[in-house]
Structure formats: C-alpha cells, structure tokens
Image (cartoon, rainbow, N blue to C red; front, top):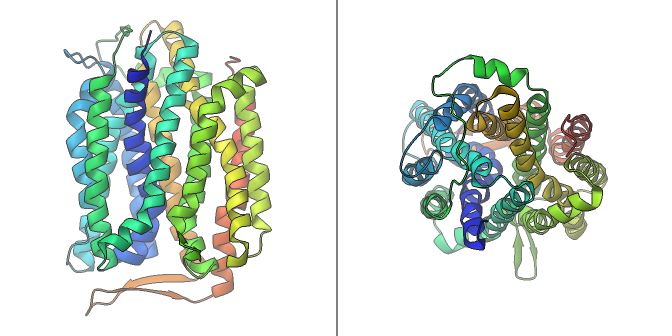
Length: 447
C-alpha cells in the first residue's frame, strides 16, 4: 500500500516536468523566440517541427531502453535520479540569449531545443512508466494519477502567477529577465525531479523482454486501445497547446498588452494561471467524477464536451480589456474539462499497458508510456509551430536589427492578426476537443 509521502513524491515529478518546464515551454517559448530571442516566425515554426521529427525516434527508443534497465534503484527511477541535473541545466541554457549574429542564434536555439527535448524524454518517459510498476491496484493508480495532475497544475499555477512579478523584481532587459528565470526554474525543476526518484518505489516487477526486437513496435499498432489512446493524447495536447501558446499573443495583440486590475497584473502567464488552479482542483475531483459517471471512457467524453462548448463560447466575447473577467471566467469553465480528463489520460495508458502485457506476455510499459510523452510533445510543439506559421501568414513579421540586435515585430494586417489570434485560443481548441471526445467514446477498454 503506497503512502501519502510516496504519492506526493510522485506528484513532484510532474510538478517539475509539467508544472515548470513544459508549462513554460508551451506558453512562453513561441513568444520568447519571436519577440525576445529574435527568431523569425518561420524559424520558430521550423524549429518546433524539426523537434517533433526528432521525438518520433527518441521517445519510443527511450521507452524500450527504460523497459530493459536493471539497477539497484529499479527500472525507471534511476533515469529520474541521474537525469535531474542535466534536465534543469539545459532548460536554463535555453532561456539564455547569446550575443551572436542571426546564424549563431539559430544554431544555439536549434541545438539547445533539441537537447531539451532529448533530456525531457530521458526523464519523463521513465517517470510516466513508474505508474505501471508502483501498484497493481486500479483505484490506487487513479489516485497516483490524480496526485500527479494536482502536482503539475499546482506548480503550473505558482509558476505562471509568479512569472510577471519575478520579471519585475529582476528588472533589466527582457533577455536578462528570461535568462535569470530560466536558471531559477531550472534549479527548482532539477530538485523536484531528484526528489521524485528518491521518494517513489517500484513494487511490481515487469515481465521483461530482454532482447530488443522491432516486433514490439508492430505490436503497438496492432493494439487497438493504444492506437485510440495515443490519438486522444495527441488531441489533449493540441487542445492545451493552442490555448497556452496563443495566450501571449492574445494579451499582446487583442487586448493591447497587460491588463492591470487594482494591484493585479494580468499578463498571459497570470491569465492562464487561473486555468491552472482550476485544473488542479478538478484534477483532484476527477476520480470522484469518474466513479459518478461510471467509467473512465465516458468521464473523458463528458470532459471533452465541456472543453468544446466553452471554447466556442469564448470566441464571442468582445476583444476589449473591459471584458477581462468574462474572459477569465470562460477560460476557467473550459479548464474544468481539462482538469477532469488529465488524470484519466495516464490512468487509461496504464490500462493499455496491462492489456498489452496480458496479450503479448511481456511488459512494454515504458514503450507504451513513451507514446504518451511523445503525444504530449507532438501536440504542444506542433500547435506552437502552427501558431507561429499562421500568425506569420496573417500578418505578423519578426526580424532582428543587425546593428542593435533588437527584435522588431511589425503587423501588416492588424484585423487579420487579431481574428487569427482569437480563433487560435477558441475555435481551434473547440474543434480539437470535439475530435477528442469522439475518439474517447470509441476507446475499446470500457473500464
């Protein structure tokens, strides 16, 4: 029986990966690369697409390697323990803007971003796989998954809410602020990842396939629950990716910048922080909601309906700072659905892993969970890439002054840009949520 201490320890892993590094990468990277670092919108789109092609190879490979790891720390935990420091260090370097020409900046951004994706895979695939070996009890898996989501969203709330105030405290140029924040959050993420590896236990021994075989990849595509679950996972991260990556552009180009209400500064990170705390609360409620609905599958469907309906509703809010609290309210209601489905995703992946073990006779837990991590990065980065591409087509142009190194952003069609940004935060996610709900309804495992 797992202790509360272990569940909190497990939650720290996603507080680091989901609540700090991935949250900042999802919401801040597109805006950072185009408006602070100095990449063009085309360069930013290409960078994120290249990283996804890289992940298609590294994520499943890491899953296979993790499944075959044997050490005194277990199968999956050593990757957290020894990957923690490079995880935090590379994240910090990625937010540093070197004084190089445009070509040098491109090389720096591409190299560090690909390294970050690799080390994220090295840590996060084994972390997700831990859920399959910490307990055999299905209810306890739901509890671990709920703790994980609460940890991720609670840390995400703290990260996003504190971001503009830390920027103000640090002072100096935007490049200096992001560099210091990268170092600070990288250090915290490394410490949390290490704590997760040390506090958790692996109670279940996987039935190992000791020899590497490409047959295991073929088995994945013959596994119908895995196919549906992976498509659902891609949709969840497209949904979140569009909303988080578009938020910065929405505040900047639709609302005229940060909105000040009393002493509260509502910038794009604070705006999404309200969603984080909502997801945290409803992530904790998710197991109760699932029992009330009667199955994980149908609970996921209803959560998708909530996301779809309120995303459509957001589109009809006037683009004015006067309606900021209505925007926050609709965003919160949308996030209720995201909070409810987030723990279900990983619990359902654990069901897929159990199904695969029963069907094939050997464990492929790491490989199966790696597809969830790959889907997470695929959805988040491709949505960010598409946003950069679509905004460039709509009329946003980013370039670097060759003499001063300053990033200059110009608008060639203001109305087109505003409409595109607004749609990227509302109608695009709504369409994805609809597809996600249909796929979840067809998921073959009826638990």
